[in-house]
Image 1 (cartoon, rainbow, N blue to C red):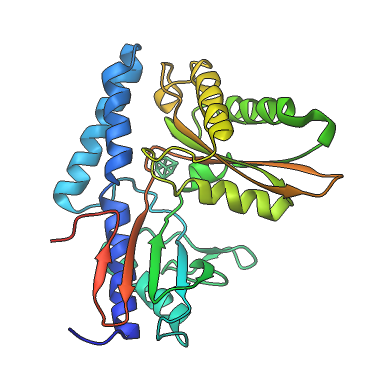
Image 2: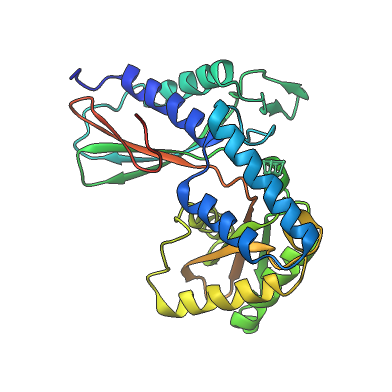
Length: 295
Ligand code: SF4
């Protein structure tokens, strides 16, 4: 076993990007299969059938599930006793360039001032990395390529605190109705209330990382998730916006304490191509994949 090095980090991060864009996590695939089995609209069912066929072919041929391989985002949990610090970000940049070439990924990083595609999915702040420190001895990496269509329908509302939970429910539902078929439903909806504008959106996005078969540990939020899911699916927007029972697979909610004068509500929409892949890297250089089986 080699000792951990930046090369191990780079290689693992590139592999996570490949896995994320070519193999849907088991929980998402199973939720899509359940949706297909229970979809009541013929057109909706046909859409789900095509999606599942696409997922199968992508996995078999190791090709991207969708032509839009997303903006490259990593969530990194860095253990206080993990031996590497210096050069970690650069290793993730190199991994992004490598995956762009090797998978390949579609170059999706456009400099908004020069209106120029950088060509390799890297550039100012991209790949974007969310860093979290924790007491531990490993590094946990999650690759989270986020598609543009479902990103465009994310919404932030700075509501009046007087509106309370009723206001939150209305804002979530209005956001989903306005989104219609644009985020490629059935979607996963991340919702967060409280904190501030940045905190709410950060938590709503992070809620998308929770596996679909893991319930919310807070019973009140779990109930609210079910209520919102029913309301969203009652809209009839359906798979790919063509009508049907399944507009969303799940709603995931998180919250933070808020300023007395503020009531931020963030809605993060994630398309059916809910790509994420995670692994832990240990000090001895061993790698444990958490979301995918790697032979
Ligand atoms: S929203 Fe998702 S499924 Fe739709 S085109 Fe973008 S990445 Fe693909």
